Amino acid sequence: MRACVPLIVAALCSLAWAGNLESCASRCNEKFNRDAACQCDRRCHRHGDCCEDYEHLCSVEEDPKEPEPFLELEEEMLEAPPGHLYSAPSSCQARCHEAFDRHQPCHCDARCPEFGNCCQDFEGLCGHHEGFSYSSDAITKEELQSISEKIYRADVNKAQKQDIILNSQNRISPSEARDQVDRCPEPLFTYVNEKLFSKPTYAAFINLLNNYERATGRGEHLGAQQLAEQDAFLGAVMGTAVLKELDGFLRQQNRYSSEQEFVNDLKNMWFGLYSRGNEEKDSSGFEHVFSGEIKKGKVTGFHNWIRFYMQEKEGLVDYYSHIYDGPWDSYPDVLAMQFNWDGYYKEVGSAFIGSSPEFEFALYSLCFIARPGKLCQLSPGGFPWPIPGGPFYMGDNPLKGNGKKIPPFATALMWYPLPPNIPGKTT
Image (cartoon, rainbow, N blue to C red; front, side):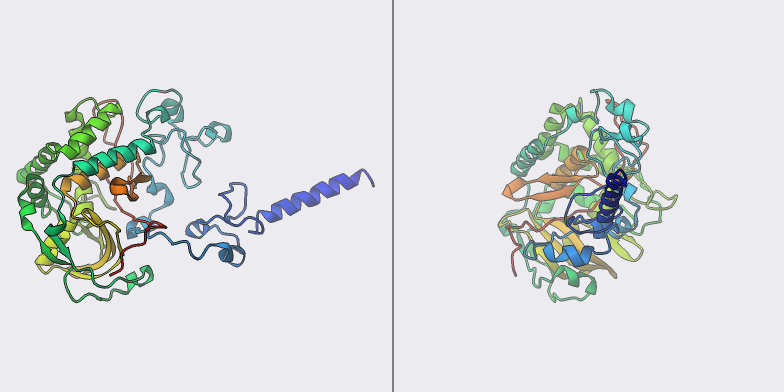
């Protein structure tokens, strides 16, 4: 009988340990545990894998004073399976030696061979130290912040304080954003100095805005003039100090060997057509981010202040309210707003205000290249500006150069957490 005691104790301990992994007792806010039957981390409710007692045991432990970050997720991304939220979900392209992520269908972390769950191209991409995807080629957080500061300082075409007068009016809570109530009787823009629009990059940018069919599901058919306008815009922005800074930085990082190679990638990233759910090539990165689209009766994309101002001036945009106004006292600033676009509602549309076209184009391109499918932490002007470098579907567009592939934009979303010690301005 005595010989059985240790076995009984071990069995009981084992059962107790297993039971602990089915409860949040002593596990609140722990990191994700792949061996547990359910989770108790702060994000478990988003993934639907919380333990049954999570709300009872863990919600009271959370600090009520800690501000919840504002996050805009466009509807198609809420509906998309987790694997679609990342660049190259079935490949190790740009993912070598990343941290384990349970939502990926295959893995590229150092221990994936041990668990037998590596992506098929793990050995080819991650087994040596040459090429685009490797940690030795990674752009560090400090390098990202440094180049974003240089881009910020180089933007001589941004609006000055006297160029724009905003009337932001009523600020609402994020929980009210779905109400579709017009709480602002006046337009957002009281005044814009339209001399800005005669600058080459602004003029070339504006020429592109009406080249698209805003309803998804209808194929885009671009003629010779529209294609020429794309080239004119790329030529205009590449002539600015902003894009020269970015081009020089990326070539220093061995991402490109020439300006032309970089321009070719930019054209494919932003203007390459792709499908948003059917066989029609009905969308592009530029159309979605800057011009805006309608999908399933709602506005998606539409993240540009120039587009907003021009549509508001024509009576096609009705500004409803805002939930976040950035802390900057000069331009560019950030505003997260609600509006109606010619009969369709935008629950939260985050946008830079007063930025030049080349500034936005450069920052989004930088994040796409440096942090595909991941949060891109920038801090130009001294305040944090998180911008996602995706998410994107993996495309089959091999680009010239060192053999890397960059997919077209499948969607773009922008989110701006409220900095914990920098509350948004009150109005």
